[in-house]
Image (cartoon, rainbow over all chains, first blue to last red; front, top):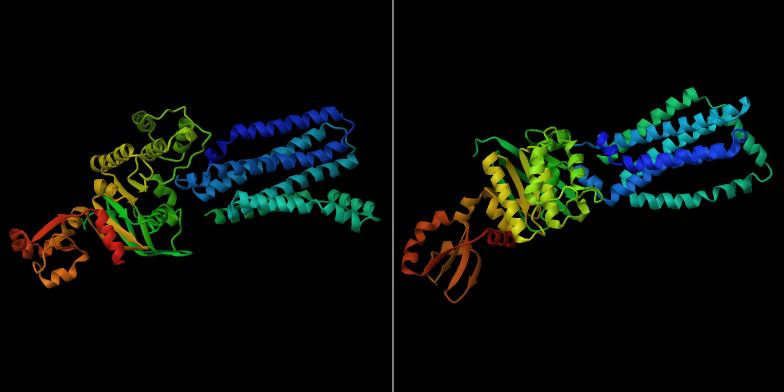
Length: 211
Length: 293
């Protein structure tokens, strides 16, 4: 199982290392007093750390017909899929941990700390779920077909802020306040275990599809 | 041979694809023998082999490899199988040495000495990237990977397709040697009947998704002959049983699949020079079976 993820270690370490270093540089550049931009950036960084390897590595696997190669080796679909899901889980955990560490070194008002923590954890959970769904899509459709669907989806996603602005034009501050209240009140002791159960359920589905 | 242990057994195996049906395949391969699976393109050879490797899931029937069902024990089976497909897939940007190291991690019995020895024998540079290997080199490299974990069964799907005659001969001779000196069982599929002629002990003809004939190769070649005869030289029943009949300067000719049975009745005609017997090859038999299918 380790061999399956180890083969991409050079890319993986280079890519993730670069983003970790870039985030640290940004934190230094923004200074300890200025946490707000870094909060928003942390979501983007977590997304890049979790999704980058998924898409780059799967593109690489498809380019080299890796699954045809692995098919003839004594390795089961369960091992292949769980290796990939395991890597995503480790990356998401490390990314979230790293972002929380950076903010623990930044001056954040105690009242805002719950919000920052929630935003980072929510980013991690969202990325985890989306990565799992991406693997299901890739195994069901192949990387190229799934990538086309994702691209179309991303284009449509661009209209979401426009629609939100249209419907909440006069109540934007209410919407933002509702989101912040929701984030402050998330019970992470319940959500994290549930998210992990959901993630492993997706992994089981992905194994069945890969088989 | 009936009493020998079968390393491979297929009973009434079915697989349905859009526009193609593998229709009740039954085959046995005793330990230490080479089985040649012959058939035209699209006859179901690759599907049959992929079912053995659990790359394709069968719709029905029973398959046993080393007594195990590939659907349940694919990993155990693949650990004891050396597989060489028509197409070779590797991580193109990785070297030969890296690929060997990567593959070795999956096998219980990987033998680095055998692998290194085969690379040297085949003249494959360890530092070369796999995408830089020619088609022939890729086949040799695949064979080195397939033989380096002491496989008990070799499964080869059109292994010589696209190879030049020198490499083809080398690959086939290596397989023959492995089977005879080390007792390895081999199943080799090909539409190039000459490959099967050179290597196989047993042959099975697969046409339009059905096994139409299985036999020991020598027995098959002893029974299938082309008979040339002058008008009136043969018994009417024998003439009617001949397939692919043609007329020519000598008289007529046709193919029989029961030469050993009718041999005695042909002796007089052969002595008088009005009947001639010609050996035929697996190509002729395949064509006869395809035309009759």
